[in-house]
Image (cartoon, rainbow, N blue to C red; front, side, top):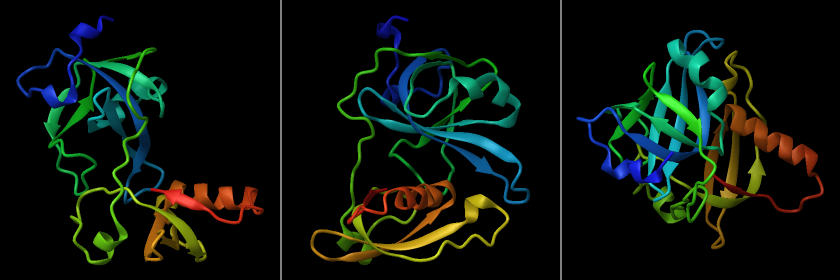
Length: 206
């Protein structure tokens, strides 16, 4: 596929429906029904192009079979003709005000030559801003710190995505912030700690 025909995320136009994006899937997860924890409402993704611009994308149940095997985290793909919709999610993962939906007319193909300065583009927020509540409450943020305390996993809810793990992290200046990990992320940290009991310090980048 000729890259000269690629559209950058910043150049997306609601009036066009025939365009191709070249993106890396930097995060992929399944959104679970609040009513029935066995029902997947959608496949959600964070996509990033070679200019390090991010956008959210969704696949809904009617198209699961068409796309599920083609969408893998940390994989680069060409996505042709997704629809553009307003991003009405409560929590935003980028400054882009729109999101993408993959549907019956959309095609996804593997991309073997994706070049970016970074894999994820982290923009860590200072602990001072978190503690003083000067960050915007509906924007996703990045944070890094050393784990200094870990509470017991709360797994009472039947929905695993609501299982929660409270912990505290500390920055280099000694400031501490309370963090709660949910679902798979909580279990990922627990599994790591159990497999690396000899590790003296654990630093998390969220």
